[in-house]
Length: 330
Image (cartoon, rainbow, N blue to C red; front, side, top):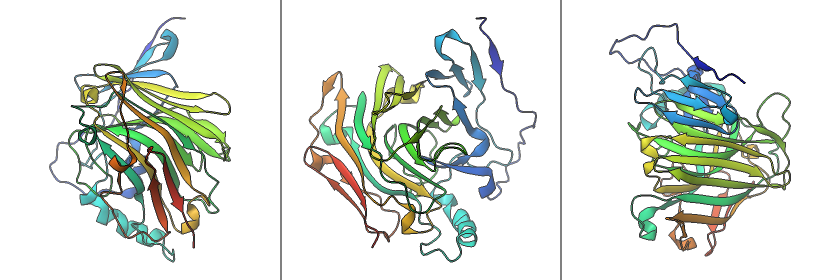
């Protein structure tokens, strides 16, 4: 098959004005790392390889030498932020208050609602982790649909939490992610994608695996493949199907922050959570091909709480690092 290169151009000129308008929520979409400019979100075929270029654009190389194309550097016409951070949240909360009028939960009840955090310094490791794997359980379908609910483990270059921290200048996260509602109109259950969110490109995700049933399990794998490259894999245990992407970027040389997370947007009631728990088990982190000794007491639970919890959420970490996040809808 003949190789091809497709270059994407934006016809709209980029303004150079220094006036910053208020971000418009209609221009953003929720991702497993907060709200991102919708025009800076890209689906790539599974097994694609991403490489950030010197000009900030991203080269997407398709599997089996099927060709490549360019994702341009994410830019906005009025200096809007790519990621919505703490300094923009008040604007979004005012819009949410109108949309969620009558909801039993406040308009800002979203973001990382439960998470655990681990840093290289907790394990006396220098600079970076080299791999993070675990199994993530697939919980029951929520009784009511949120806008979107995300469950994932992830690795980051800095300790940045959406809605809690100011806008980052340099940032990357890699993560295999379960989401509900699933991807696409005909998806009835959970969907699984592998995500790479970065300030330059925006949010890049692999082709979804749809209709994943409660009771299944996802093997999550984030492993270094080179000095500045990683492979991100989510595999459905019952079928063996995987959704995969590889990303390369100098900021990925160091990924010293590990997380297990529950994140929700459009949560207008406690019944937008699953009726049971989500478990992250067999958590394993590696450095220089050596398995590190993970003690449950090393994981921090919700170290940057964003709000008062109202749905009896609770996270328990066992000494072997098995982590369970409960949603006690009382």
